[in-house]
Length: 372
Ligand SMILES: Nc1ncnc2c1ncn2[C@@H]1O[C@H](COP(=O)(O)OP(=O)(O)OP(=O)(O)O)[C@@H](O)[C@H]1O
Ligand SMILES: [Mg+2]
Image 1 (cartoon, rainbow, N blue to C red):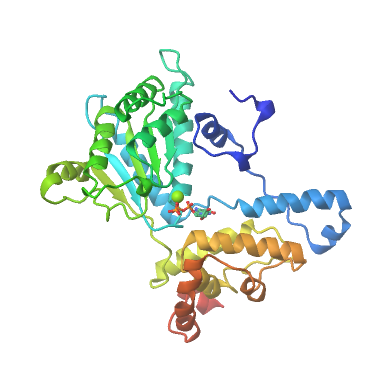
Image 2: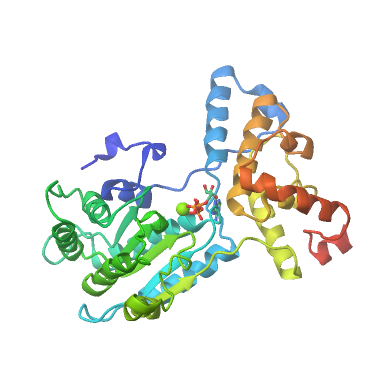
């Protein structure tokens, strides 16, 4: 066990072990450093300035999670499912799949949910089970490249710190994992980046079977997270051979999406603006001003991120680091132009910029444009 004296730095948490997960759940909210104006900044002594700048760098690198409409609606849906899954253990429970493109905030939203769920369960039922085991309401496994069934089972055991034997078969490891899940009274099993699971040519029937076994035998809500899960045939009605098996999985799985921000409707533009206002309040630079992002950089930021929250946050984070380092102390188009963003966002940017420049599109709500 990790004592609070040797609390690991949040930067070192891998969340693949229960102790790390607990640290994540119990970690107090980061405190936003106070925004100092230029004068106050100059007045800081050298040592204090170093500490302050370090605090700002860490803060900007960990913005959020911001309660976006996507995150809020995902959480509502997840609560519906986990709360309706209170049937007795002998009934198969509904599963959920969060299936969306990379960088849309799936992992962030799911972890934020897991944290709330863990806290609620511990508050209601206590930290130990009736049998005296530690209670772990959530088990979270992040898959890595080319994980097979056996690795998946082993990863579950690793979460619990159970020394799964090297020479055990996939089935034996699976049973040991089931044992951990039962004794720790796990209620939510999260499999993140499920698309990394090895999908055989046999249209994933083996995988589907295994997940079905978990869904049937484990008294948990299974939460699958990944990219293009539908395309992998995870919930499709399937073809010929595996038809019934896949259909069964499909029938029990609720698919939830996390769409990017879009500016083709007034409501979409309003959501985009609210996101920028929320981000703006989190920027700790001496020369920030209201409307720095939401008014002056709205179109620009949309073009550079194409409405993907991951790309937006990366850009803002890097921009803030640069503004702080160079002494610019505010975000401008000029400064952000020099900041590189991820490849996918850069690719999509050009086309969108043309439309925005030509006045064919705008990211700002009508009401704001009329007022401004
Ligand atoms: N609600 C949010 N508030 C603040 N930042 C967010 C939010 N959602 C996502 N981000 C930022 O976007 C980045 C990408 O998000 P995340 O890793 O959750 O996406 P993902 O959909 O899981 O992507 P992948 O499919 O690549 O795993 C995060 O590192 C985080 O900085
Ligand atoms: Mg992810």
